[in-house]
Picture (tube, rainbow, N blue to C red):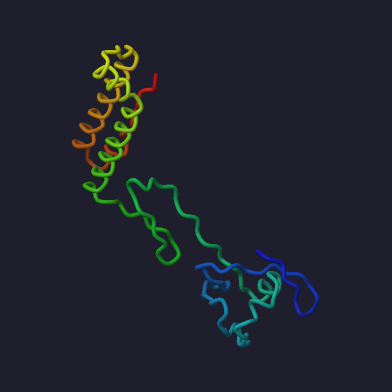
Length: 170
């Protein structure tokens, strides 16, 4: 919100543009910037901009803030403002599965990339790979396989419960 100096020398807060309108006490919408009639009195399109919240409330007009979107996981739902309320829509299960499998594959690849040089060194000059690195790499592959197995078999409710449990880098 910004403070404005009105033509009467008073400061007032400017209403920010929102999707939700002003409303009368009986629930009728008063569009921002549009002329309206209330209780037999005509108000110009700039009246709401030039008046304070108190003046607006005195004639029975109040601002309705945008509704807050619900908490949701964008991996499984989309959230869209429909009229005056948010609507959650379930993403297609096949798309969720594809995204989760791709994410697990990328995460595993990134973790294994960190120690690939040790494998190459073993191949190149027969330098032993530390046991904790070998165990780490096996744990990464096992976790990727677990995720793949659970995601492939999951329905919509079950897939929301699958969380990766990647091992810590040695």
